[in-house]
Image 1 (spheres, rainbow, N blue to C red):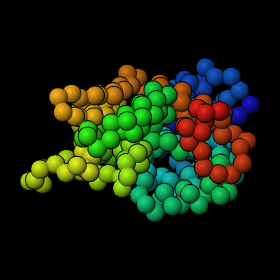
Image 2: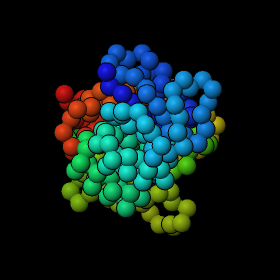
Image 3: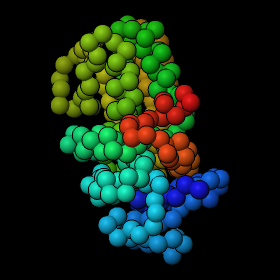
Image 4: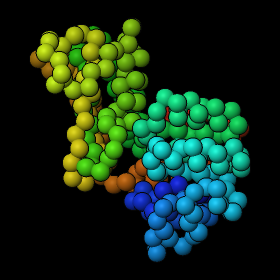
Length: 251
């Protein structure tokens, strides 16, 4: 049985991860970390990892970027595996995550949906086939409570698609501060925030007289929770190192 700590257990994603684990064999929630402990949560909830007493095999993080120091300190202390589903980390934080991956297995992804990872593969294929004859624009939309913009998923898509071009692409975030024609090596990235949108990503390849759009929309947060639990089962017991969705799906 794989013992899981959910960091951010009191949030909406925390509730979804609990549901996903309850429907998955071989995995159980033993505790959580959050400032608030909902009455519906039936396991111990601590304000930080420093107070955790349970044996933890995998920590699943659906919180905020600023909690990463607490998470990494816990991993160094207990050698538990990490599944990091939080986005918006700074360059220094990402460097610290990479350093910890020398000690424990770290599974990090900007999006744990199977569908979004298929979108990335399709977008990479389209870029390699269409080339510079088609302009590329990425539009993402999320709920009005999301903090980081553009989304980590949009940035992952942009980086993967840009890698298909010689010399890469120049990322342009909106165009309100520029007053010039679009350059051939630009890739526009745009963020929409409103309502209760779970997550929508469109990759547009815009050519002469035609537009090819590859689109994915998550209609429930459960798709991310299920993917994170699958990642937890995959990474538990793995040697120290960095792991991602492509590696898991290929196996």
